[in-house]
Image 1 (tube, rainbow, N blue to C red):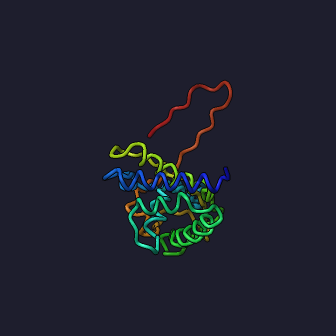
Image 2: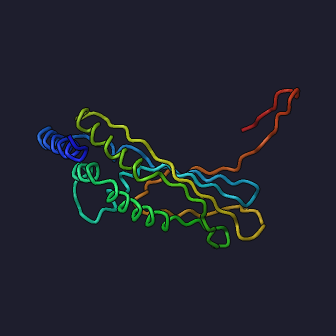
Image 3: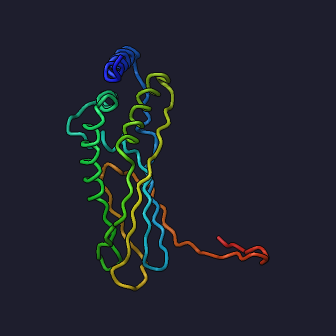
Length: 195
């Protein structure tokens, strides 16, 4: 049997189960998006975002459907079509992330690393499977990591920044810090670390 036929049968079966199973608890309301900003060398920022990208796609969807309908449609979407849709969403999300320094200057983010479309679609498929198998119980959805870097335009040290993200990523838990680095050489006594 062809892979596309198996996928169609699988999705039709899942649809029938979900439509007759009664209320289903989806995890899209349970997880909190997170951002971590790390300042190194006085003017270099590393940004790590841990996001519910399935929820982001759902909330940005032009067609207003239930989350269940969104999962069904996107889990069975052909890979190329899903990749096109994901790249559109990714571009909108990335363009909405803005970091400004104390002088209100935008720090240009670069070296973006995003999850691949097949990874995001796999999460959607997993959510659909969990909802089918564990109807009514808490579902765990992984937060996928996105990374980027920025440097201050001036050589002066950064003392504070503002972070702006797309509204679909809110609420957002933000953690920021400036690490203290210590080298422990061979044969030296233990290093004292203060928090």
